[in-house]
Image 1 (tube, one colour):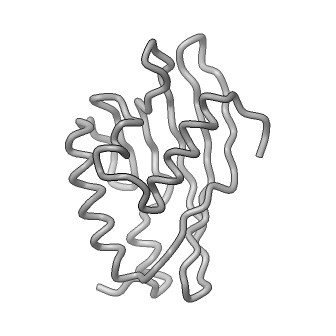
Image 2 (tube, helix red, strand yellow):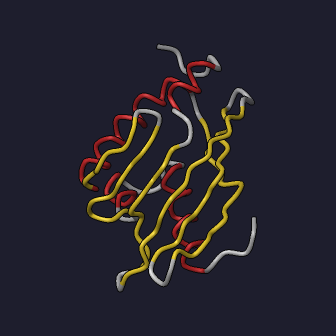
Length: 140
């Protein structure tokens, strides 16, 4: 990974921990602005952080069918967008107990405010559930 600022590194270490089941649903949404923009293969939408909490719980339940896995951050690069915003590109690898590995990319825009960094934009470059179904890791 390239050199990253301390606060960006901390945010993504927390995010990675949460992706691996650390903390409750509310804790994971803490890294997001109260309202943020999410984009994926279906388009973009404005999402209240409270709705994110529920969506993550549903996705975790769905992923239980894929078996045990660990999500690992393998690439992180940041670029400042002025004084208050940071563009962050990431790559993740999901490692399943079967030995299967799935690479995923995502892009974030962070806002640097008085309360620290908050995710204000999240772009998933792949449809996680679709990729897992294509690879036969997730059935149904």
